[in-house]
Image (cartoon, rainbow, N blue to C red):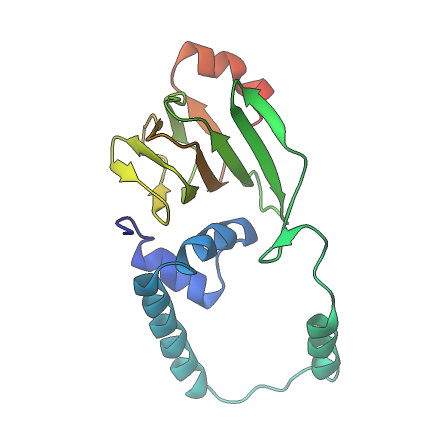
Length: 197
């Protein structure tokens, strides 16, 4: 049962299409399996549609139909998952792997899949900007609670946490960060340039 959801502000931005590509992928990974968040998103989309209906009409570009049809007919790139293409998987530590998502990044944002074995404690860190996490497999616990499959974590620069994988299966998460992590322990700070996150 999902207990952690995106904020209403995040869901509204997702519905409006104003989140970056990377952030949208993580929110979508949660929304697809969460009836509550699908309902909130649908309500935000309906509200936005009603507001658009009240606006005066605007002239469309002469080639708008051709552009839309070309996008519909374009095949999805090989190796995608809901339009997401992943790069090469990299080893970070024993049992810990990172796989970057290929996105049109804004600034220093990153999107990646993180695979962490059971019992592993990640370095304590805070964030430069926001971080979104969708749990795809397993579970982890940090200072704000237990996050299991389907849960969504939302942190910002004020959060300082140390996730630890719980249970008897590895934890797999799709993670978007607006900027690099700020490691809080000496080993994390020493390894951060090499880790690239």
